[in-house]
Image 1 (spheres, one colour):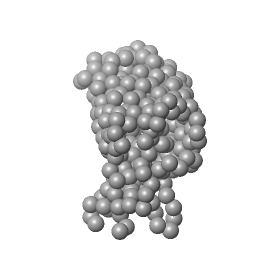
Image 2 (tube, one colour; image 1 turned 180 degrees about the vertical axis):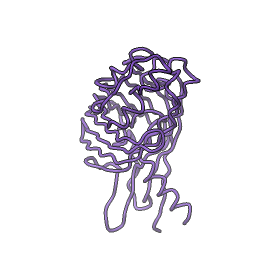
Image 3 (cartoon, one colour; image 1 turned 120 degrees about the vertical axis):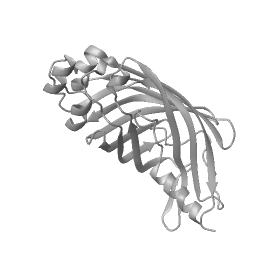
Image 4 (tube, helix red, strand yellow; image 1 turned 90 degrees about the vertical axis):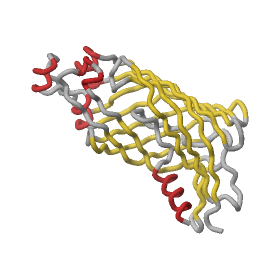
Length: 270
């Protein structure tokens, strides 16, 4: 019973967890081979791991490989309430999580004088609406640790299913951030200006980036999936004009990842 409760908590809290230090995935709609909806399966969760190539820090023109934890809730039956996920298409809502890694000046001379920004955790809610050939995604998260700002993102995407075991989702996305977030990663204080030689700068708040992302899932077996992701984001507004980016980085941000996951089916109530 304890194991079952732990699995339920992990599925709910980790719904479609994104890559470390990367924006939220919106491929948590419906996989190529959905979990079987039978009387013997009450909960299906997917867990896995992969790697993502992405900028060292937001706005950087250097790249690194970071872990990509894959955790998603595929199917959940709640007696007397209904079901979540499975083969049903439509609206779903759940937790949203993101991790932003530490920005350490000792790892990049371009950050000299700006001070260390600790790792940050972001928690919030996400909503997905998906029908046969298209979907929409939105999320809002609060930061803790390295920053205490609000981060929002939205995407509109097309869905292509060339076979029963292969599904591709691709479309434009935008991100938004509050002043607290912009100040942490893009503003330059007078003290930082004196130490780094960069001009004093206040980044403000608003839209942070706009781009396009593609996510693909290929089912190797009934329970094992192979995941691909690739994206391009262009920093905009206060983020794009930050001297941290214009002097030491790039407004163009690319990412690509590959991962493998396994689906676990549980009978909770019998």
